Amino acid sequence: MTIPHGVGSGGQSDAHRPRSPEFKAAVGALRGLRQDLISDLLAYRPLPPTSVDRGLSRVLSGRLREYAVWTPHVLITAAGLLAMIIGANRNDRGGGTNVLIGLLALTPVLLTMVRPVMAFWASLVATAMAYPAVDAWDGSWPWLAGGFVCHLVVLTVVAARTRPRAAAWMWLLTGAYGLAWQAAAGTHYHRSNTVELLFVSALSLLAVTVWHIRRDAQRTVTAQQTVTAHERSRRTLLEERTTIARELHDVVAHHMSVVAIQAEAAPYRVENPPPELEKAFATIRENAVAALTELRRVLGVVRAEDYEAPDAPQPTLADLDGLLDNVRGTGLSVDKAVTGAVRELPQGVELSAYRIVQEALSNTLRHAPGASARVEIGYVLGGLGLRVVNGPRPELSLLKPSPGAGHGITGMRERVSMLNGEMTAGPTDEGGYEVAVFLPVPLPEPLRDEGGA
Image (tube, rainbow, N blue to C red; front, side, top):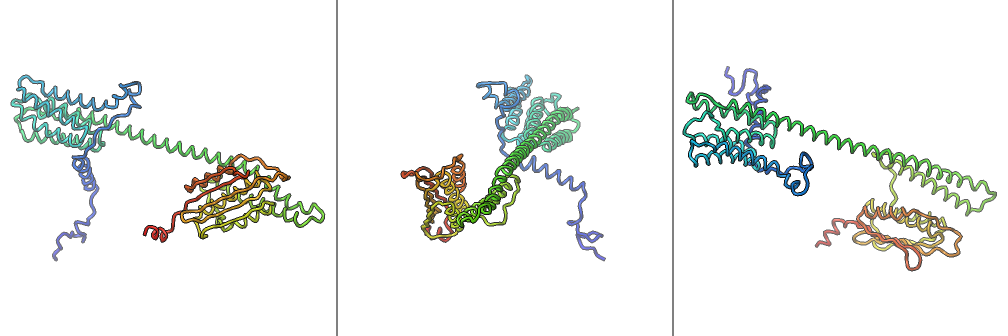
């Protein structure tokens, strides 16, 4: 029986046969070589200035501290000049040859500051170009004295600017390069200095790898410390919020509960109470119970970071008549005027508008008891306008104004600012007080298209 081409005895295609771990490791290694030293060959990576907040730069001051940021550039340039001097310092060669050898040793080192991967390959090419220029063997083969220093500096700098995997590949390629030179030359030269270069460069690359590991460890520790500090601040904030919630519950909730109970029991303490009195106490109790319900919701937000809002709908402008009736029950005369085409607004705008009117009327009750108020709502094309104005407190009024801390106005401004609106608040010429708010509302798409047309 003929076995189809590409199919083994097990019936599986060679292309779909599972690969061995060794094969996968080799493929991964070659992929890393291509990524580190081939794909990034032309990558432009200028060496950035160093930080002056660490190392010896911290003890400097003035202009020395400004120049200290270029310390790595100066050190690399000095190493390149040293390699050039060592390579060109031969009396048995002509001046032109010495200049060529020196430039071939200097160029790859300077190239590490802009194109590090290219600098490695340039160092190998410079070695191949420099040696044929020397007529006689001087005992250093295939790495001339200047090329030896140049390649050692290039390996160290490029390893520091890339990653440890690239350093390993450069070290292996350097050894393979030296062996290729030795195999090509045969027995013409007695010894090679590749082993010496590999030994010294291994020590240098080991130090760079340890530096990489230490730097990564410091970054990890710094990140963990940042996360720990953030979690600690969150925990402290939650503890403070829990303390505030506990105090609110112990103080406000207790007194509001007493108010509700007393208001419910008060009519039974008077023989034949008038209906107006019973209605007044009933209103007091309803407001106290509503305040307790709202307080529990707020305490839930303060106590728990992941608090979920209740399913009950939040008040909107449609509930404003109920609020005005409730306020009128306290004896405050309130009028309402609506202009423009009434339409449904975003939930945040509806809730903020309701709370702003509620707080403005509460301020009227506290600071100008007995005064009359007017609520104006204007639906315009670009948003919603609110105006709550009250008259002066009657001089013959028996009700005394209660002091406030100013948190009501602050809360209104925060709501308006959250919606990118505008607000003005201040006394009127007649002696009253006025709160004017504009809350922007984006136009619906059809209206926006018609306006653009």
